[in-house]
Image 1 (cartoon, rainbow, N blue to C red):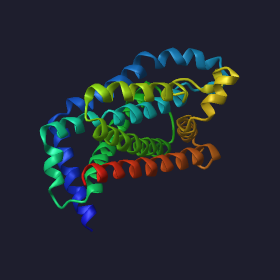
Image 2: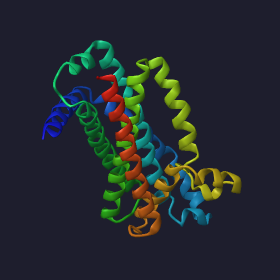
Image 3: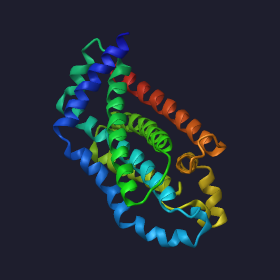
Length: 253
């Protein structure tokens, strides 16, 4: 099919750019690794005396770090698109017969692959720090976070193509992502929060996705919490791809 062939062409080009500049992949992983090494041990003492952690701080903290990686790692890929637009790459792609949807899908596929690699490295580091979970749970958790990254990458590209400016993109992304992340219980369970804050957090789909990944790490893959987290992730991915594809089609028409 044409869209698959075109998406593969865009994917391989984007992947070559990432391979030529691996420093950005390393920097994207640096923050969660620092949180893991410097903040994780602090939680071990807290978890021992708090039932919200279920007796294991790593199974609460590491899923949160994975989701953080998927959110922040994918949300800022739009900066690369702004640079490509400014250098005329997007304009040259517009005159090709390539499917407009493939211009987005190929880039998002590269971002998902990068997240899979970064998530695997993060989990290996967590295993060295003391995380213990079934291997299949770790795989499903990493895959769920990579899919979530596809949603954020699609929206990031869509916003970048609309604003076409790093100066506008940076505050816009920070203004949205930071409160969403803090309200999701990304570092600490929201059961520690006051009741009103828990109610606000319940309206945040990311909170349920994090709870789902934490349930996976506990080995509860078929629990309603895990399945709800997976279902919400798929809904967000489809929504993000639809929005991103629509913007690419309009801007490339």
